Length: 160
View 1: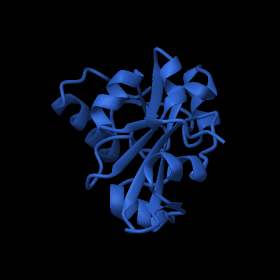
View 2 (view 1 turned 30 degrees about the vertical axis):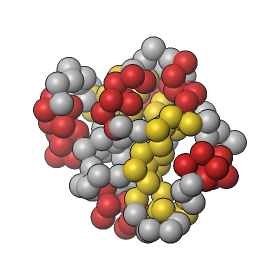
View 3 (view 1 turned 180 degrees about the horizontal axis):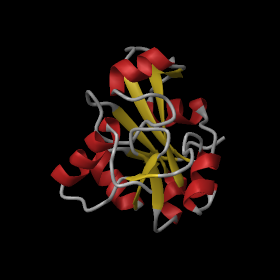
View 4 (view 1 turned 90 degrees about the horizontal axis):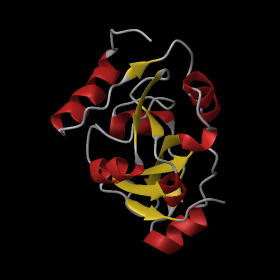
């Protein structure tokens, strides 16, 4: 773990600090781009990875953040039934434009603009979870309650 953070990770660290959190963004020596990579790098289970997925709102075209357990696939049907939001695929350009990060490093916080956030209730079973922190090899540890507070997300059953 290096002490020097890249600008994208520093943006996340600054957001956390400004919001009264003592979470520490860590640059890992190996990839955290996928949930499997992140779990292997960190030494936790894949399910403890809080993967941030950006979708496009089918009706408004706005960004929707889904923070899912690393072991779950998102069921768009369950999301639509619980929230009324139809999720459509977002490409890399859309993700970078709307939230300010590249796919594989999207954090659940510190976005360019506010995003509607949906949280996977399966994350609540863990006392500690890990989220991306702006780059494909940076992460920070938190708990589900803090994830909820920081994102103002809606908890739903969203796993396929």
